[in-house]
Length: 97
Image 1: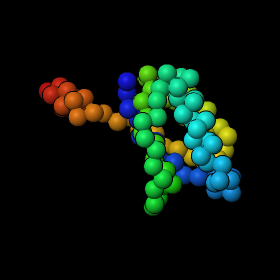
Image 2: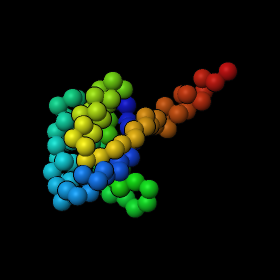
Image 3: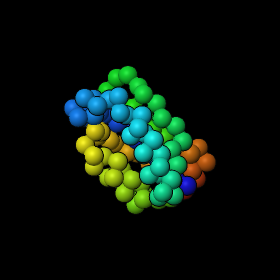
Image 4: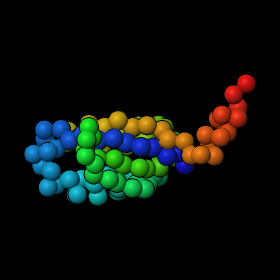
């Protein structure tokens, strides 16, 4: 399954209700499972972003649905990137003419 890295920032609503964020993370894990994906790792971070999520989803369309559903509650803003494994990277590079 494709891997994704999602960077999160809490919105004003999200930070005002930060004590509820573990419950929101649990709900996100369930959403991933319902849609055939998996949360692989979650980190709270310092700096420009508030949290990082490493996940897998069956395809980009599913990941887009998950992202839209997760952010629709207004507590977070996210930026998701498709991540390629080292094997995928080598295949991509090997295909350059």
